[in-house]
Amino acid sequence: MATSVTETERKYEAPSDASLPDLTEITGVATGPEEFDLEATYFDTDDFRLARAGVTLRRRVGGNDEGWHLKLPAGEDSRQELRVPLGKAVKKPPKDLSSLVRAHTRGQNLAPVAEIRTNRRRWQLTNGTGEMLAEVVDDVVTAQTMGSSTTTTSWREIEVELGESGDRKLLDTVERHLGEAGIVPSSSKSKLSQVIGVKRDAGPTLGKKPTAGDVLLAYLYDQRAALQNQDPRVRRDEHDAVHQMRVATRRMRSALQAFGKIVDREQTRALTDELKWLASVLGTSRDLEVLRTRFENNLHALPPELALGDVAARMTRYFAPLEAKAHKDSVAALDSERYFTLLNTIDTLLTAPPLTPLASGKAKKVLPRLVEKARHRLDVRVEEALKVNDSDEPLHEARKAAKRLRYSAEVAEPALGKHAKALRKRAKDVQTLLGDHQDSVVARPVLLELGRGDENGFTFGLLYGQEVELAHKTEAALLALWHKLSKEHL
Image (cartoon, rainbow, N blue to C red):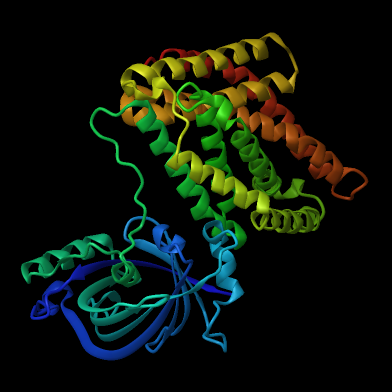
């Protein structure tokens, strides 16, 4: 199994004759330099799919962290690094890592694309108590591309990586000192991107007066990135990964549905069907996770004398095999040709979108009308739900309408500003309220199953009663939240 660390670092371009500033002035203590010779072979597809996604996969020899390394985006200046020992494999990356980039490779082979040799000098910046705040390395790099043709290049660069006790303010401080020495931020985020000349796809940038199409496509691009970034986390069964990936699919689907007059709805209908399929597959894992967490929290909140028998163990025996199977099914779906086809379809949508004439209109004029249409949809669903007593399905439909309004306002927020933001928050409040109600609907039959014929039936009965009470409170609170939402205008 791969081990995981999160690294936060910045890279800098250094002229060959530039001298590092006195590092002791930054934190008080700077130990070093230590010197290493490192050799790394980088793997990618022929068309550099990993590099374009900001992902690197390499086999490194030398230094104190030699092995196979997979680096995945993890926010500003940060990447999650997964490590596997060197082993005997040289020509092919280990399956533990190559399986985590299938959202990018989609069946394409991974092969060596560059060899990079680095002579490294390293300093460690510590505080007065010896805690490591950051590492500063001075690298002299020689790199060679691989494949049908090869080129060789060399350069010098400086990297600054935070230690466990460092913070981003320290990065800013180090950067200021480096700048005074003529060492400036690098235009390349990795050694590989510098040697092969391929940068990470940054996506569209919105101008001051974007069109409706610009705003929608930027949002869809962000959701594709979120979906692909969560893919390896789902495969590794990391906390909240299924939820975040499912949210990305739902956001994209809602956007295509709500703004079908900007990106032609008929041409995206098959894609939204496939996004619904993926959300459904992931939904099994997510629903089980939500229920288990809900039951555990509610059980913990009970007075100890009311938790009769070994209720927690009963829950574990119930949920563990179901969650294990759901995770296995999710990974199988992510390894399927159907999933790869879905990702290819999203790529095609973003590179050649079926835009309508309305897409060229100013976002501030076009988007409000379409968001208001989503609001009207919610109004109709809430009115229907309030007319019916003790009926769960109308409330479920209202929840889905609230979710569409929330995501519609979210799409428009970059163009419409604070009014769209306020509407989004109100819609989220309604969605959250009705989501709690729906979770209660799903929870009750499971609690009946857990408690039926079991020595812990009394406690499960109490939890069931709490769910019934919560559902009634939710229905009573809906009207007030709906009225608050109606006061928000674009």
